[in-house]
Image 1 (spheres, helix red, strand yellow):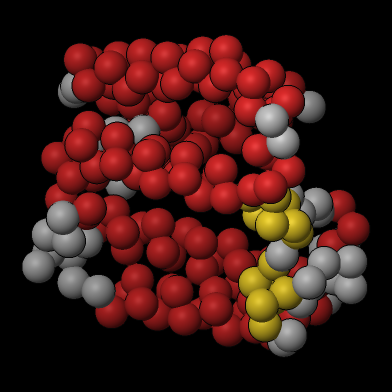
Image 2 (image 1 turned 135 degrees about the vertical axis):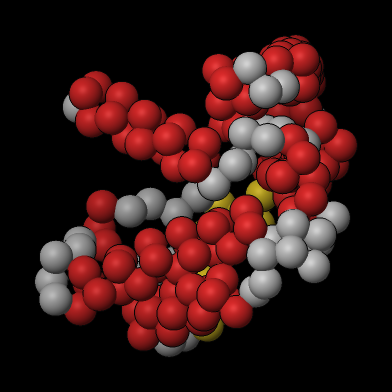
Amino acid sequence: MLIKAILLGVFFGFALYKVGAHLPSRVSGMLRLQDFFLMKAILFAIGLASTLMALAHFVGLFDISHLSVKPVHLGVVVGGLIFGLGFSLGGTCPGTCIAAIGTGISRKKGLMAILGGLIGALLFNLSYGYFAEGGLFEKLDLGKLTLFKLSEKFPAVLNIGFPGLLLMGLALMGVAFALPENR
């Protein structure tokens, strides 16, 4: 299992490097809607994964019971917005900052992103007990929800199941092909 995880990490790092996700200028260009190359790669990857998962389900190779759905939590939404702000300001995130450091392209930004993540994790750990005792986490928990009804166990926004997942995957890949590389 460890070998698979290492190989997957190496493959993911290589893919990040090949699409230029380790370059803060490319990330910032994407977020400013000036350089669409990275956005095209992300949309295509999500579309391909969605399409392959739906097709694997249709031919009986994919068992949905192995997946779990995490609750939608308002705290995660707020944290995601904070993360997105740091992502756009720094032009790097946890996955890409390691690649940036490893290639020597942007060691300072990469190290700052890692330091920011560690400080954020420390602050969360230090404040967790206070917020948990006050019941804040329960108030922010919105329950489990999926976009498509892939299982009877979880409510969904759209009741179209795996055909919807397939259509979304194909649509995302189509958008990826239709987008220009630069504005």
